[in-house]
Length: 446
Image 1 (cartoon, rainbow, N blue to C red):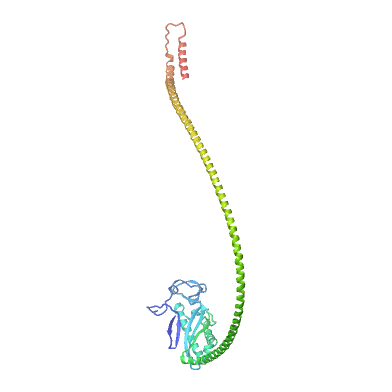
Image 2: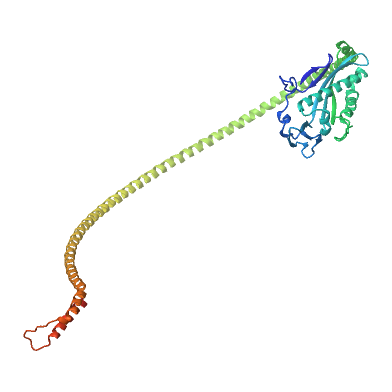
């Protein structure tokens, strides 16, 4: 909190805020550029109320708690905080008894009606408006507090700070800043602000001498009560010490008698204990002797049992060794039998290998013989095929030339001259017919 001195006896506290260092706003609080821009979207936080004014009228559609609007250069926008605010103030004043006192107080307030508050303070610059509001309220609280203190006694300031100061300050300031106006009423009263509470945190008497004098009666009374209490305590302590000494002496005598009685009883008890102990020792000696004899007998029995167990164990070990030797001999015989069986198996395998080799050789010879026979047959078949192919070629050639031959015969048939030499008187054209028939049969055969 920063402090600004309005007078030599009054302090007004305002919140710490960064300050401008240059320009026409030098020394004033630094504003949020998002709330003071000339145009664009302007948004309020959930704890702030946005008032959007266009042509002198509030736009209800874009104004509200935590609202957002688009600001044109000709519009006005105010962002008003509606959260709780704290304000501390300190003032000193001479009381009705001409005694100087200093009062430190705390006020909690909030802006309850932003549509009225924006008309009272210029919230176009929210930080500066908040500072002006704090300074104004602080000055009001200080002035009212000094006026009330001037009409009160010191005891009233110290003991009745709630009724005489806090309640009176709240009753005096709250109606001024509260009001019940409306935004459309030019005669609206109040600032739209509600003061929730005012507390007086400290009341201090400035004069040390006066404060000591005010404390003197109380200190004297406290000292007197302390001395009386000390005397009563001393008296009670002395009486208790006497009673305690008497009780201690009686207790000492009773204790002496009790000790003498206890010593007599203790001597008798010691004699009885000695007799009982001697009897117990004798009984213990008898019991120990009987136990020793019993232990010796048990030891001899255990030794005999151990000797018997050792002999049985030796016999058992001999039997086990004999059994192991027998099993070892049987294992050797089984090993020899297995080796002999393996030798027989190897011989059989060698014989089978030789038989397989002879069979393979016979199969190879048979294959060679079959391949030679097959090659001979294949050569014969190839020769037959070549003969058939040659005969087929002849027949094909004859078949191809037969139409030409028939045409030639048909063209020259009328000019055939048949000369028959000798003969048995047959018709020569019959022989020609037989020759043609033979050619036709040949063609059909092909």
